[in-house]
Length: 170
Image 1 (cartoon, rainbow, N blue to C red):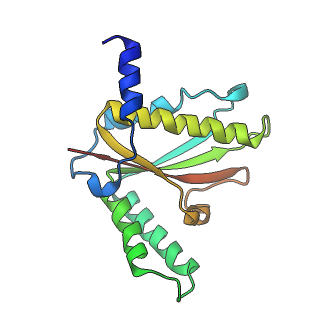
Image 2: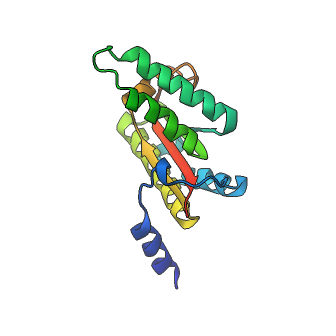
């Protein structure tokens, strides 16, 4: 297969694969590094490199799950709180082998939409790298990520755009 055919196949196979379908095997550090590095090749106006990724694994990931559950619980009125949703938040994070926070850093040098577009292209590169490596992944942007400002040490000129879940699949 030539490069164009390989690329076409990877693009056509790219899918969101959810944590319920991940198996228990660990993604190698080499592949994780490759996935995150692929994001850094996204086009970005004036070379602002507006993406800020933080990877959560192991104990840090478990703490993220508890924090997200607590945020959900504390931001919902008792009459709309759903125990199933609360449990699902923890399940998804804990079932993933790695979770990456997706943060945009607004440089002030270009319009904000361009920085968001650049981060989105970085995530698409990560999606394609996951597909090429047989890693399941998906980008989730629940409203509660707005409350992760402190734990992600998000600065005034930054915004969390969601979480990128990854796990091996059979």
